[in-house]
Amino acid sequence: MQLTFFTTSHCELCELAEHLLINTPLPHPIPVEAVDIASSEALVERYGTRIPVLRREDTGAELGWPFTRDDLLDFLGPKAGAPSGQLH
Image (cartoon, rainbow, N blue to C red; front, side, top):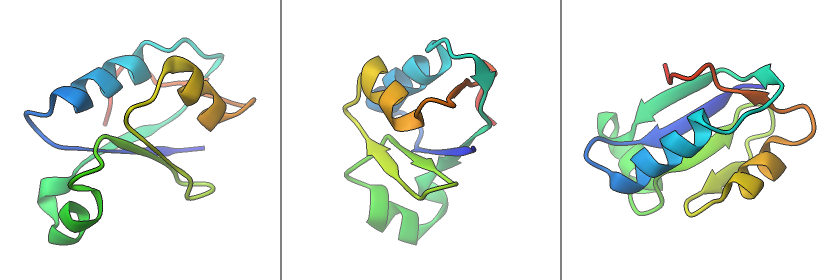
């Protein structure tokens, strides 16, 4: 499983979501790629009013803010892992 974290700079909600993602303890690492939506007009159009958003690359499922730790764990499923403590 790999996650894409759609975000942008100066976004307080994105910072809250990132903190939750990094600090949710899980048994295995999950790669997370942070994508700044400002890098693409298409991404701004798709996610501009919805960020932060997590997308599972294996299923295409998306989890938009607001979400809790329990929502995150449910989204990741039983084989969830922990981000390495840093987004790439």
